[in-house]
Length: 500
Image 1 (cartoon, rainbow, N blue to C red):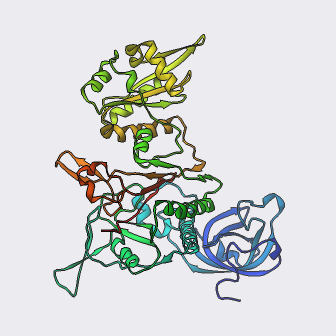
Image 2 (image 1 turned 180 degrees about the horizontal axis):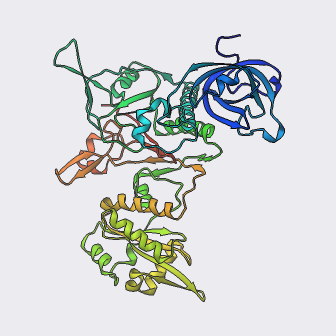
Image 3 (image 1 turned 30 degrees about the horizontal axis):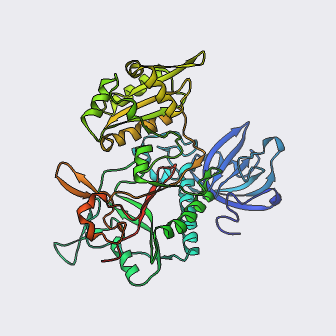
């Protein structure tokens, strides 16, 4: 028999009853039931229950064992009684009656328990990372990541993509963040840069004639931490394709993303046909260029109802700025003063003066709007707003006013907050969309100049970019494609400039 094991801790089943086996692993937990000891033995693959009674020669050793000790167990596979079968474990129908035990490694009292996964501060978890990674959730996440990467590679290769590994030490190039620099031992006073993206190398590969490139690419960026990224580095699925147009990217990438998510969706639905949404439409309806489409709230322009109205705050904003408008954020079942007041407090915490609202009640077939705005604009305008938004009794509506370029981000945050507060977000699905027609440039008011709105390497729409330099503001990216998913991860794809 092998020195350490004949089987792993997830392999044995009822059909193995009577076999003499050897297992090795970590003691997950120890239980004493009337003198009989039960040990959950854990390894990379799973958990098997070990039983030691006082008459076993292994009892003297096993009664000293504590959590996270590493032991080797020799014993016989036995079936559990029907009333104690553990259906949560693949090995739940059997247990090992221990005959011999060897302690391979002892452990001191744990600063971070593995069993039960109680919540611990992040600094403790990072200090004892080797213990944290033994916990079931962390272990499953790492194994799922491995499976997802393997699935990505399989799908990409099936679509004729070739995987490359580009250099890590490279020259500095202008990107969206600061570089991490590595001093050169050979060339004193000079530095390498860690790549923010494999941009130059992958373009070199395409120029060399390779048709389709992909890489699970490390990206190093000296930037402020983000909620969905490790500080300083992250990995992305990096793709390049030759001789393609926008539609070719959609047709190729969409089935890959859909198939990967369906494989790992755990029963959640996945968008079958990704809708195409223009940048302008996304900002108008959702207040974001990466909208969460699980949230059913769609914002609408209701400016016409406030022009020359009795609500002077909005009517004066509209009169003083031709770019100004009023957006409505409908809130189904949000029609209580307590909720509206709570949202108003939230808006003030976000640095806004407040969040105007109307909520409706129906009595004898007549809808009545309540709140300061309804009082000032009158019944007719209030009813017109309700009709436009399709709201009913018990619903509410919140309003933001001004230049959309300045308040779009806040309105998008308000839309998200309302959806979460009212439980409107469908958490049983992954909702994707292609966001297209991004603006190529945007005006920097402080420096009085044009800035690139997004990736400057992207191909502008149209064939005569240089001939229309005077209307740069109107240029749209050929395809700055973005898909947004429930896990808040997103990736940008674009057609790279490939012509003079």
